[in-house]
Image (cartoon, rainbow, N blue to C red; front, top):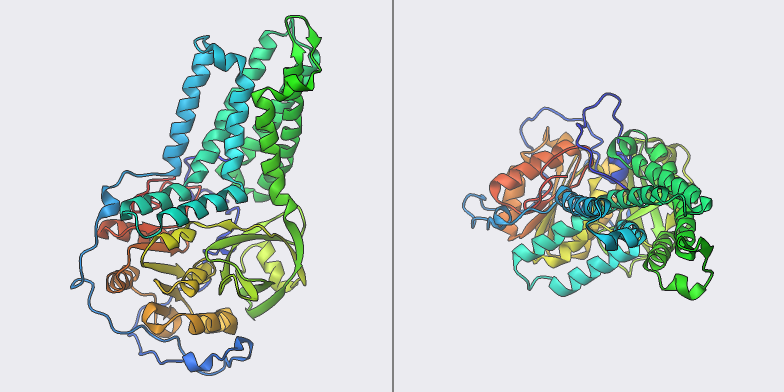
Length: 514
């Protein structure tokens, strides 16, 4: 249960919970002063079908895209995004918490008897919705529905709105979680107000439930989650599970106890007729489903450089999915973007940039197996199928989250900015790019060879207009994401970037702040 905490990222001792490398966002290369840009040569022929045998010692460079007309002479962008109402985590969170706060106030003041009588249903309904927003099955079904029903034929503003809503489901999660805690507190307080007719067991279990849910919620606050990730994971997960057990006890005891007669109604039919019984049943199922999909699978780890581990798994995947992996079946799961040639492929890959302890261990002590949830979850760029054409721009290890979209769809243009990509990321990734992405929809900028970083907005605008794109998806570190997002906003280009918990920022051309 997360919450939006408005604090600055630049606090002393700040360490991201899931590091940028583990999110696939870190640029692991140093910046170089900008100098003259040399010409590129075509090295596509150097990548045979068996990319493992490619020669990395040859002095080759990534190919440059074909010469394009200046973006100033191209058609103007449709400023659809700038005119549309903004959607964001913050707005979802504020709306849900405000609505529930009004309900809690009315119930506490005696102006809403229904909510007082069925406060258990009110709190569990909110908690059920919070868990639902983070469930992989629900997320995949939601993305499938949107991608199937609204792809390409609907107005652009509608498709952008769908992507924005799907990107900001976290606001619903955190808002419902905090609201559920509020309703739970109200119910426990109301139970103690009636302590003279309540059984002691209900009072004790009520307190235990409230404490467990409170600890689980507090551990998910951004400051805790990002600066003490292991504390967050242990408390949010394990104390949350304990909270569900206590919630079961609190729900059943409350349903079978009759205060007016101080007796117990042990009828199973009576319990099955209560709303809160079905809410807690749904919560339990949603929590258990992902863990039924946990498997230990064999992996092959390629180490093209000390900075990157390329993890290969069996079977292909659809584009823009993310997977969680761990060395343990239950602890320290880390999310990475998945690269695959399609569902027909033999393998899929994850790019793990070395930064934190987990990613460093993949290089220093490569495992032969890893634990993973076979049920993958969709990233926001899974909605790329909604658009007729688009641009995918990324930096560094962000290629892990971006590449599958451009491999599996000929309607997406790839811009990858990095340093010495061939040597750093190895022949597997280079081979996937060269075999599946034509030069006319590819711009790979090697800042080491070209003498520095490009004017990101200039090359993005040129690619966007000349390619006839409708939207831009960005995967970069915080600074790079912010700069490109701001540039797209000023240019009226619809764009979606990565979300961070710790800062207020523009996250999308039609989106607000987190």
